[in-house]
Image (cartoon, rainbow, N blue to C red; front, side, top):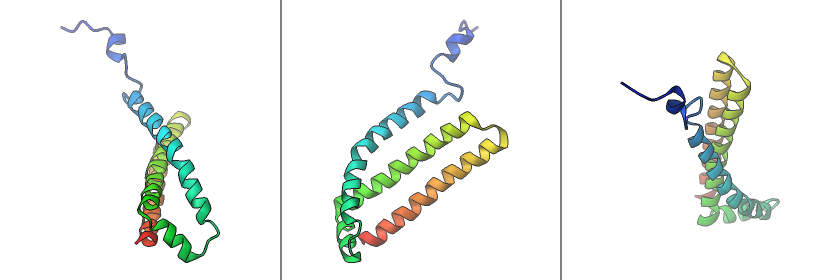
Length: 123
C-alpha cells in the first residue's frame, strides 16, 4: 500500500513531467549562445562584403567552420525548443501538433541546408 499523497507524487514534475529538463536545456544553450554568437558575428561581419575567395578563405579555417556549425546547431535547436514551448502555451488541439511539427521540421531543414552550405564552402 502506498502512503504517498497526490501532492508528493506530483512534486518536482511539471504538466509534461519534463519541465525542469527543458528549463535547464534552454538555460545552458542560452549561456552557450551568449558566448559564441558575438564571436560569430565578429567573424561574419569581417566576411560580409568580401569577395568569394576571401569568404572561402575565412570559412575554410577549422575554428571558423566549427564555430559556424555550433551556432547553427545550438541556435536552431534552441529556436525549435523555444518556439515549441510558445506554441504549447498558446495553441490547442490539432493546430498545436501541426505547428510543433512544422517548427521542428523547419529547424532541421534550415540546419541541414546551413551545414551543407558550410561544408561546401569549407571543403
